[in-house]
Image (cartoon, rainbow, N blue to C red; front, side):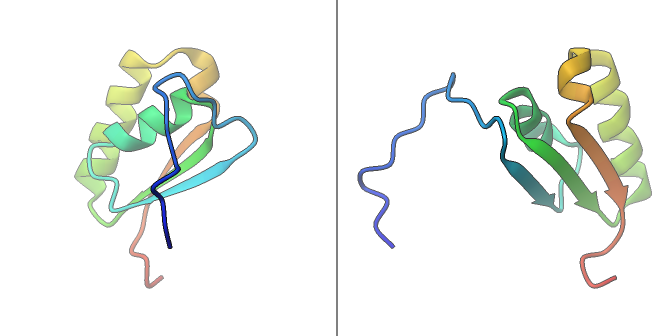
Length: 78
């Protein structure tokens, strides 16, 4: 696959798209995707990291981004 013509601007919208962040850890990538407009699900097997991701998002994201973001404590294999 050739991505040489692909460009991404920090202001590019992901409205209408879905994103799955496998191994989301503390959720920083998940948060960014939600802020750009994607309906985002972050998955991680660590309950502590999911809690940290939720806490961070609730403290730092605007409501509209929070509404597009969910975190799930699970393993991909489940």
